[in-house]
Amino acid sequence: FVHAELESPELLAMCLRNISGLGKGKKDSATLVDAKWIWTEPHSRRLKIDLEVEKEVDDMNAVLIRQRMVTEFVVQTKQCADCTKETV
Image 1 (cartoon, one colour):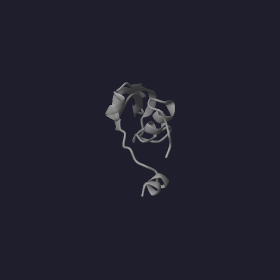
Image 2 (cartoon, rainbow, N blue to C red):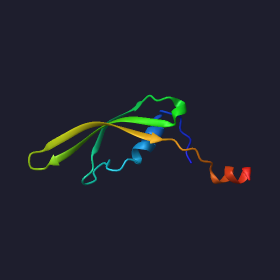
Image 3 (cartoon, rainbow, N blue to C red):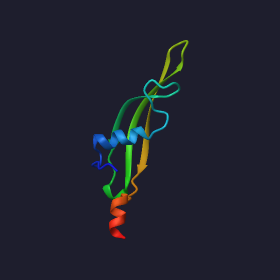
């Protein structure tokens, strides 16, 4: 378990690691160009990230595609094993 404040850089990094298809130097993966938080109500338990990614699609002509997208995560609360034992 890791404690991270809402809309913090640590939480952003943790969310970005969970997005499949993003990778540095991996074949057939898109490269992250920009990522920023989109504000949501704190009680909504939703985290939205505005991403800009690019990918080379044609090796012969060096064609790059750059795209913006919004990714949404849902916060799920869960207690660690030690805290669960204390409540029982």
